Length: 195
Image 1: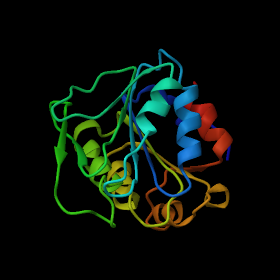
Image 2 (image 1 turned 180 degrees about the horizontal axis):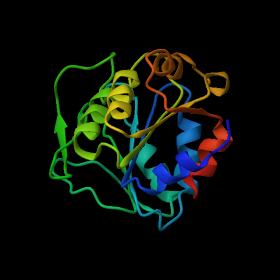
Image 3 (image 1 turned 90 degrees about the vertical axis):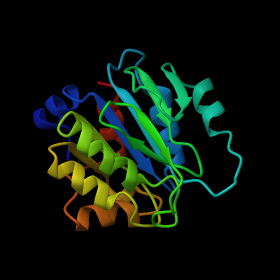
């Protein structure tokens, strides 16, 4: 399905964009980071699964290729527009009602820390309908429950078309639980992110 007026209106009303992904999502997220306009007028929060204790060059690579300010989430960071935040490894990233981040060291969810569900669920409580959330390729069900909570809170929830995902389990889980307001192709997702 192509972008429609409902998608575009809700996108423009969003204060934050959440992007969650796991196996097979890195290239898509990297492409998104490279193409976000400098004056997006939204905060972007990216939760991507990483191996425990695995040193990552993700932040450096993303920062060198982004037109927006980009940084790894730190505890008590205030969420600012026109900034991309990357969830750090070995912590869950939660959004507090003061629109700040808190980092949590509790158990992994779906074998993942950071967990997409944890961030999405906390965002639903704080941002509700002023949020767009996008769930991409992955090999488990992390993100589906959080996306459903966001949808029920009035957020625009988008799932990558499973036929285009390198690993379809994550988007399929979201579709099967009724969490997707829209299922979009990669090209439609990128077009939206640049409007």
